[in-house]
Image (tube, helix red, strand yellow):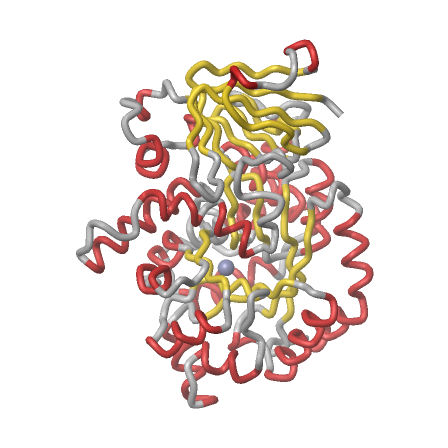
Length: 438
Ligand SMILES: [Zn+2]
């Protein structure tokens, strides 16, 4: 594989000391970082490299990690803007999903991959249609956690139980992408769509195969009322009683939490995914992010699908996460830009059990790297680079997105990808679908 050298003005390593290296060089080969440090100390001659990226004003950051999305929902962008979650699901999403074809999903996924790459995301956790996700990853290989969805409290819900017998098929599909790019999670959709028996079975299977569990948790007041009425417990208490809460749980949303819930989440080392734009747009409420972070809970960031938040841009989410807490708590100190940046990088890696591989720019980690254009008018002056990245940077400022050592996005272009064809097909299919529900 190619040996690549990057030389930039700054590398924000996101390592344990949060080192920011000035006049930085990053070398990688076979998808792995072999050197991070100052340009003057590079232990190789330039002729050693096949590819050299010189960006005099570049800022290298670890690839961003989107811990909760529904990639193919790009198909539904703008079609369901003004509904609460329950009606959003019942009136729009489920009728649309009943008409989806594999081709629709394939192009929906590809379109979201292009969006994520062009906004600096290298890893995402998907919760949607597994097979079509894998097909799309064969064309554009981002790093992903693919979730096998389970829900049995819906019509035809029993079919999902069969998936437990087909686990090997899912493992094989994920492995077919190669380079260990795809990891699997079990995905009980939510408390209100999954029986207790299903959740217990998922807990057993997760334990047996050491699999992540990815679930929508305490997203709306409806869900809280449902759980209270049916079980006399909060959603977190209920899940704790079943025994499903542990460090393998990726709990998306966690909007409505009591103090006792936060204690449980902390004790059980649950990873919580904050999706501020989606929660705001669906009028769900606001996660008590400050309290969760203060309790030492690992909180990462997600965009949710484009049907709910309309954008897969994690820069939006970093900024919104901070602003939202300030509006609610009237505390201008916490969380700050660095907290948000860690949520989108190191915390995400930890939630996925991938902290030895991604989430920071360090030797022996995977070369998942984004280079930002430090001479963008939005990013001057270079007084506080982290502040600039979190509050001012937009996808237009991204120069390169590199996944596993491969350049998948470069200055507005996607090397070796037929973007005209993908977007043409995607747009045609999305419009055809959306016109069926008018
Ligand atoms: Zn979601």
